[in-house]
Image 1 (cartoon, helix red, strand yellow):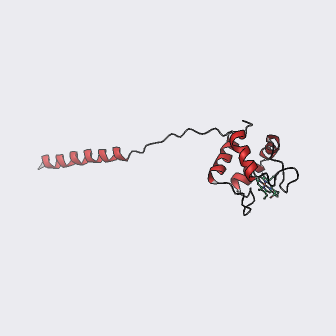
Image 2: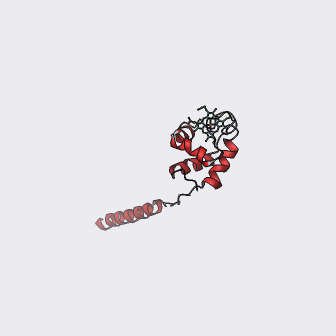
Image 3: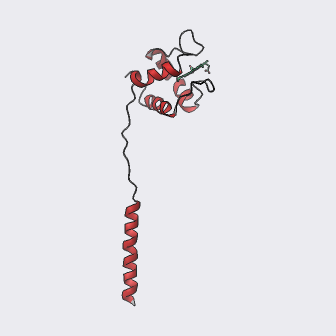
Length: 116
Ligand code: HEC
């Protein structure tokens, strides 16, 4: 009788350990992409911001040059409006950033908003 109980316990334990092994999560390490201003951000600005954010435009600031964009990075409004409040580009105007574009913009800002 004891032998049977022992076997049941051993079987149970080994079965359990197998189950746990199979459930071990596979951690996928995704290297963080370096977002380039010239290759990624400038084209987004041209397509989604520059109908307003140019010298004679309705937008506050000139995003046709890195220097103009940097002014809004430095005053904190780029992060607060685009990433946090998500109310730039102006909602409902058809210029909304796609999820990918928003992720790229966020990464670029978090990486120091370099002129790269
Ligand atoms: C349809 C026109 C329009 C588009 C497109 C647009 N903006 Fe704006 N933006 C404005 C206007 C008008 C203001 C000024 C009024 C305000 O702050 O809401 C402004 C203000 C801002 C400000 C605040 C500047 C400050 O110093 O307070 C930021 C940052 C900004 N926009 C970023 C962007 C970015 C980045 C894009 C493109 C990804 C974009 N906007 C697209 C019209 C636009």
